[in-house]
Image (cartoon, rainbow, N blue to C red; front, side, top):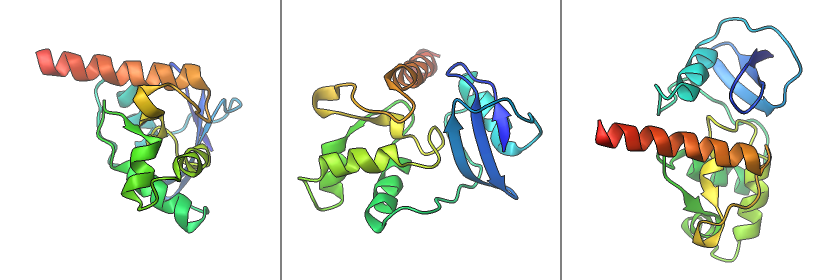
Amino acid sequence: MFVVDSPIGPLGVSVAGDTVVGVRFGAPPGPLGAHPALDQLAAYFAGDLTDFTVPVEMRGGSEFERAVWGQIAKIPYGEMVTYGAIATALGDPGAARAVGTACNHNPIPVLVPCHRVVGAGGKMVGFGGGLDRKRRLLELEARVALARAWG
């Protein structure tokens, strides 16, 4: 596992070859190393990268969780989608809580942006990394998106 220092604390990044297989909040000190994912995360936090291109592999999870993670991966940078909207997209409008649970089990947060999933009306609820990290990630993306729009 490599460690990336970030504005939301150290992130542990697990890789298999070129592929990211895990990201963990609050990682203990470890090797900084070199890997394209580390470079891309640094560029993301600097506001220079809005789309990750490093390959990811979602390991584990139920069929429903993998479907949720697939929907999350489609949320554009700087945008938010509700848990209910994801449940509806998956054909089960009553499964918003289950979507929240799947988000919490996301093995590759930040790269698979579960922080972009919010409660009804944009309410800031739930996040495996804590609501402060979620807010900071959304604020970063909003600032970068606004700066790019105003050039």
